[in-house]
Amino acid sequence: MKSFPEHLQIVNTFHELGETIAAAQFLIQEYGLENPNFKGFELREKAKPEFVLMTTEGALGEPQIIRIPENTFEFPLHLMLNLLMHEMIHVTQKTKENLIEDKNEREWQAYYEMLFHEQYPQVPELSHFHKRFFANKALDYYNRMGEGTLLHIKYANQKQKVDLLLLNIM
Image 1 (cartoon, one colour):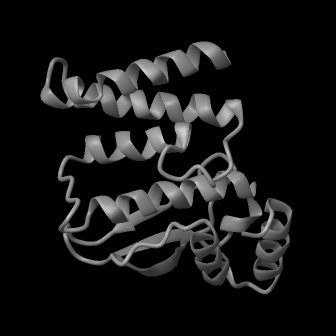
Image 2 (tube, helix red, strand yellow; image 1 turned 120 degrees about the horizontal axis):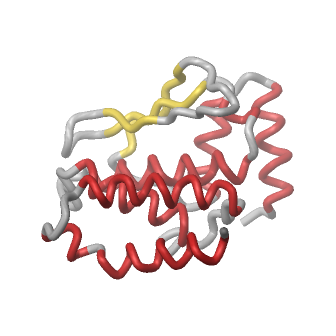
């Protein structure tokens, strides 16, 4: 695998050429994020610095499209890589073999991976600022699962890990 600076240079070249989808495709291949359930990327409206929206779209059990902002690569590459990873986790969660129907559980798993990179250790870590932001998003979804539910119990150890992370990066 190429180094992060090499990836950054290649992505910047794609960006300068207006090839946002090619840059995103390059990154999921370079970082081993591919999935047979992934149908492809489509562009959406430009993102603002305070809000970058990527979504995974498609019926559960069917191939998924990821919509990314046309200006995705105007933002820090380590952050965009983590957001792409988040969406590729959703692609996996929506396969017939790995189907997770509960949206709260899907979001919890994707945010948790952004914080700890257990499945994808090759993806660069986020800054403490972004870890705090995404940890709080993860906890929002954990809380939406419902107090004392099977999902709360299933993810209790991971929740403790998120709580500890927040304490250590404050």
